[in-house]
Length: 384
Image 1 (tube, rainbow, N blue to C red):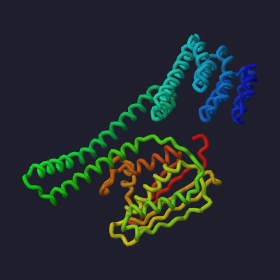
Image 2 (tube, one colour):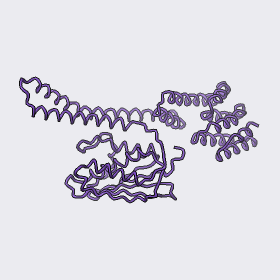
Image 3 (cartoon, rainbow, N blue to C red):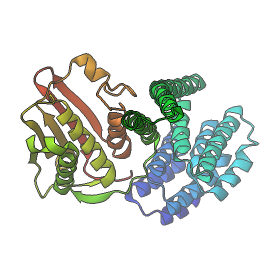
Image 4 (cartoon, one colour):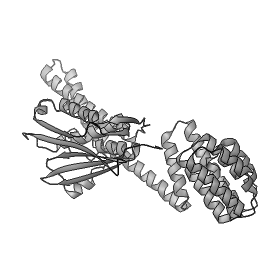
């Protein structure tokens, strides 16, 4: 009866199929089939949360808490992660006193996961929620795996912090030297205005570079909450060209920026994130040429793949190119050796492509030939 009532409340076709499968499994009284059906419905709700469907799922689970088979009750305990709070509390009261150790452990684990999510929402901590979700998925493979993941997170954080400290120290020490020189100038009975102006300019440049490093570090670690919209790609690429020419200043006269993007090509994207990534790739492309290069060739192209379900964007230059080992170190924080470079631009671009858009990023390069950046994005951001 409860299964039939749950079917009335479902609206999604896939959820209706999941409800039918669970009803059939319960009718056949097949424990393994029930477990599979419960887990399939759980995964659907994880992918596309919906309050009405979660309530329907809770109604379907309720009669199963008293099932004679332990594995069915354990599956219910694990699935309780996606039901509404009131329904979860009711399931928790029953399963917390279950006679089987595995069932009690399963509902306690589910309660911890829900608590982590609740704390993350209360603190508005998107990063904490993402990390909690990842750790919850890893925990399914064993507590040892979770501990290894936590160690990896700690090591990654420590490594980034050490590199940041190293970069800041490299600027802070010369900045201190510049300030001491300024203090000496001020202490003199007569001011050498030319020398003072030079030292002020040096200190100012170092100060700006220091802030560029700190701003870059913040941007790398910032979580972007995307707002996807239907975009024509061509205007975005044209804006990349305009901004690049402005940044190049006098060198902008040598810019040969070719665009091979159809006006009709559209995709769902977070505009500012995609623009930021493409601007970074275009900037890197012109920096691949010698300072005295007579022509700065950059070509941006785009096409659709897999019957329009994917969009491939390429940024190509004919600059100096890179060795294989250099390509492998592109995403090392603060690893840039370019004058004035902070070494975090590509980290930010990769974050916008992979984490925000769910895409992929690859580099192909050869010394003396040039570099091709390939960005592959889903054309539609369903469920992201």
